[in-house]
Image (cartoon, rainbow, N blue to C red; front, side, top):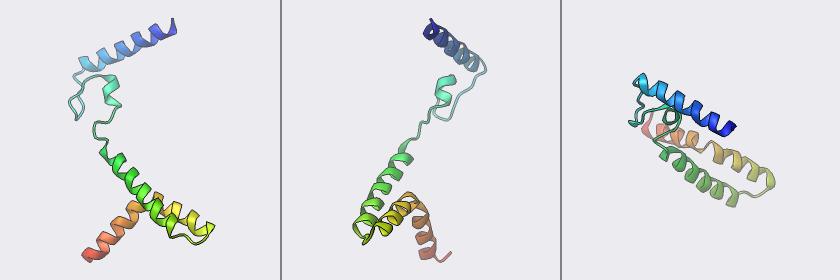
Length: 91
């Protein structure tokens, strides 16, 4: 019973937003599409960079502390990338 109520509530919300003419940047209409991203490649790039940085930092770690520090560095690797690029460009 509650499942059918939720479906009808979602349908009502979708109809309301469709009636208002709402359309996101990907061309989708409706309430459910409003909350879904259409450009998901950034997460994949960050994930692959995280794994690569994690492997690099962990293989060069000589103790448990440097391994933990390597894990933290792997999380914020984009900051190191931007810093290196700006330093190279002389900005």
